[in-house]
Length: 123
Image (cartoon, rainbow, N blue to C red; front, side, top):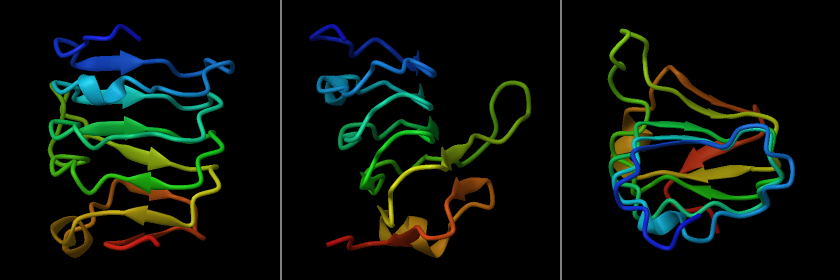
């Protein structure tokens, strides 16, 4: 990933089995869609992804995920009228960190494994 990617608003790296990390992702501040499903990522930092609307990260060995700084995640519809998705299925996550507002208004189109919970504190 380039050192500066502030202009990117969509990234699709799904099915990149050798992809293990996205260390410079925090520089992609305009990102609205991220698909990293079915890779080999075990850590994903979304702290600067305040414009992120759609996230697909299933099929990775993730053990934790913090989307608490992504207030637009899964809210609204894309230009084709389909709801934005948050999908984190088939991971090792047991707790997904969310903001209090997200916890109070969890979207029906958010997908996670049954063992995973949404919480404001995942320690």
